[in-house]
Image (cartoon, rainbow, N blue to C red; front, top):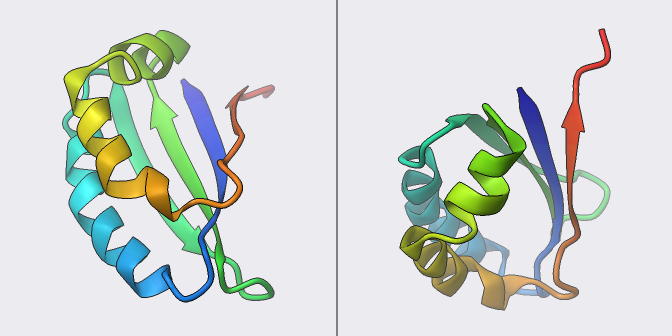
Length: 96
């Protein structure tokens, strides 16, 4: 199992709109092949910052299956305009 980690810095004043858009967008990702689960957390110290954690069966489920899909274009249209700067996404696997 792979853990996708993205730190999302949302433009000032747009957190409520981002959260509403994410509520719609999460149905897109949840329907993808290889998706296991996800969570979105809001930072206490930096209220414009979120962390998105998505668990996938394989790395390719995210990098190929999702990112190269038509569904990704809908995800992108809903969310990408909120970010500044654009997030770095990294992938992790369990050690133990």
